Length: 92
Image 1 (cartoon, rainbow, N blue to C red):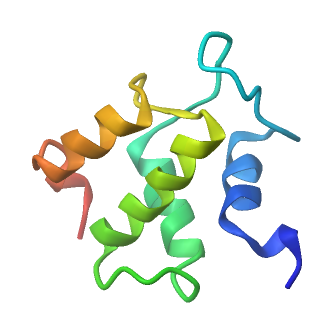
Image 2 (image 1 turned 90 degrees about the vertical axis):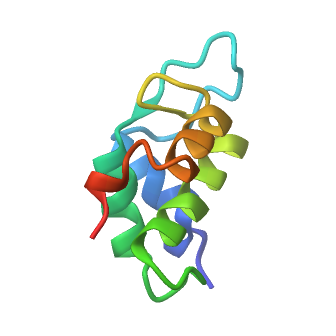
């Protein structure tokens, strides 16, 4: 399987970047919830989540290791917000 077919590459493509900074202090990459949903729909057949929200949470987990912020928050904060229902209107 090619690395270009994996979720991190799809996230980078959505960001329009070749690679991420790799440092929280210098991190400038930021995705919106809508971009996360778009990536999760693109990778739908490769992700294990049963719902759109569950698949989006998987992509958000990838953002943790990539040091990509979501909606201006650290990914773990954004994951907590999604689990809390703050973005339920965004999901089908």
